[in-house]
Length: 330
View (cartoon, rainbow, N blue to C red):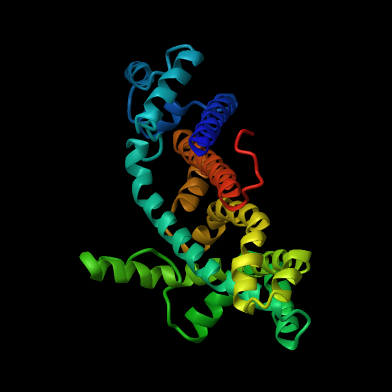
């Protein structure tokens, strides 16, 4: 019952913050110079007489609901967004939810695979380096993580392109599927994974340094505590001490780091998706900003807001589950 009450309070907080941020985002969108209807009808203006164009302009403005007061426009936009209608793209002249469906799937696939790979490598590596602190293995890993942590993602991307697409042409440089491919089922999935391999390698490499160092630092701090020495004095096996006692307590700071990294990974994938031409929401957002397709930009920004709020909710619940000392009434 306490956990349910705790989760409900956090959900109310998420809803409140989401509404406040949605107001701010919509206000910023409305403050940006430019007329979305004029942008949409730009190609038609040269082909029509002024009277016909003015009539079409007013009809389009009314159809998009832009003739109503801004508070009414916001209410309609918010209500539609909550039901899955994110508006109409001025660039693609299609509903936004049709445009973002495929890129969202590609971004989720890229980030979830990189998440699994990064955690599978960094958490065991961080634990081992903490247990073998100051050994030759630990020092080697520390040098490697510092180098990886210091290099920007686009530099790592260029190095990987040079190694795996130029010197050894193993993976394609860009795209999410083979041009003209009509494959379905597992063949289509394999083709997408083949194209995703290079950006996946880059995203995983960019995250190894930071997560490994955070895991190592958290484990070293916990392993120096008195209760760990007491557990060892009782004759408990080293694996039990490390994984049952030390690692669980090291999860408290790790939850913060891992949740923050999960949220930032989606933002960081904008660079990777743009470099590799990966058809994801990062690339879509970048293109929409350049083309001033604001309804697409709004939809993408609200996705990142929701992702951040969901990350904070997961973080709070994780704290409560891992550490019984945290008061659920907070």
